[in-house]
Image (cartoon, rainbow, N blue to C red; front, side, top):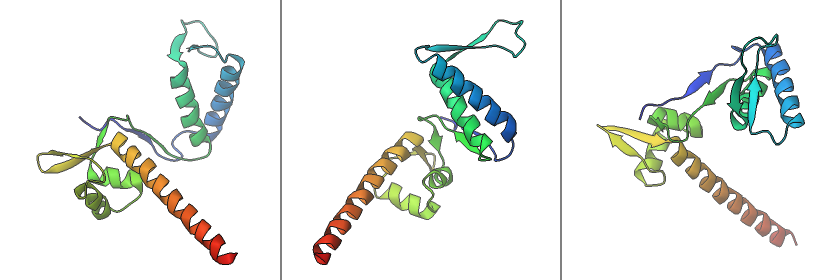
Length: 150
């Protein structure tokens, strides 16, 4: 499966225009909370409205909110397969560290020829599990600190 990610670099989208658009979208969504599809028409009308699923409009609002803050955004399908460098970037770790995680079985992967591929979904599963482990360790340290301080 090819990686089908879409990236918009910081500053590519005009922050002022993005901010105005996200405010209008959020206002519309708040005024129509039960509406499953959202009709989108030009500011001057005239053409048939484009009908979008509510969740797609919410995702667009998120992207625009990030752009309004001057941030870049990457949209990656959950089943997208990433290279080891892309996967390392998603986890914000080095590529050698990621490869150790793959080889130890912490994160599932498949080989395409001699290249490893990791699904975005597998990375998110690992990240959730790792975050939970870190929270538990922090809680244990906090409890130990309270015991020693008492």
